[in-house]
Length: 80
Image (cartoon, rainbow, N blue to C red):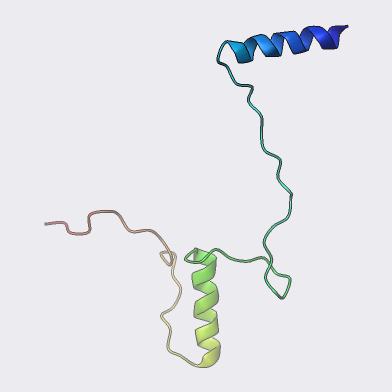
């Protein structure tokens, strides 16, 4: 009998214009590349480090990594 009372209360909330908050369920699966490793978001710090390492392996001249590698710049740009 308690179940019937709960459904009546929910119906009353919907009739008052309220919507019950329902969370979406996640599949729990992460994106993986063809080799089975996780895909790194393009433009992220990890992606930049990966690309720099690839270029070093090819023999290209690449600037050294620093603590500022991949950081966002402030909006505006000029200080004048």
